[in-house]
Length: 233
Image 1: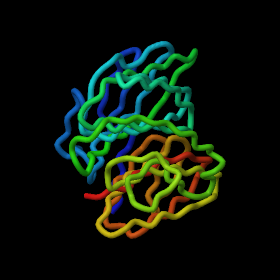
Image 2: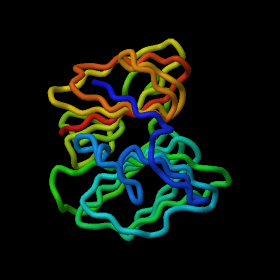
Image 3: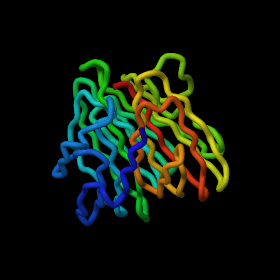
Image 4: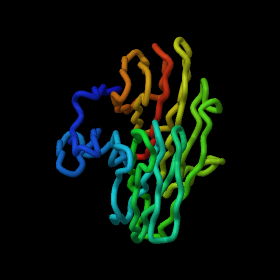
């Protein structure tokens, strides 16, 4: 089963400095049919204006992955971490017992991100933050794991969940495959370009909720950049 969730069907709000679209219920948007997908709880498509951002606020017991699509995001938290994550790269925050952080666009232009929240396997644990570059050329034509809590995944950002976040770039006409394990949930969003996923066509920023598919074959209609989450129920 692949359920197409067009970008125009997403909830959200335009706050001026932030134009936020929500693939799942979040903040003031609530849809009982879109409360999560497996352990995936949040997928926000955020456009952040220059020299603005999220002021200090707190989280606990959530794995928060930020994929930067355009521009850059600057992170700071009460643990003393500070870092700038550029387009195509990823940062991960394991909120654990609690962390206060801020995320700012300190650039001269607009920043666009996917903010992905995954429910951890266990509550608690010391909070952590990390960032890692993932050159787009390294994932041309095949899925590359960006963040994972699955044993055996190497050279990724660690998360505390039975899940992985993957990136892929395809030139128009190219294809790539991904094989799911048993009883897994997938959620795929093209950051750019249009694609077909097992024959279902997606435009940029549409969502595809995937269930009971042993594998997917992604074919690029245009040059495309994609993010996929593979998670336990």
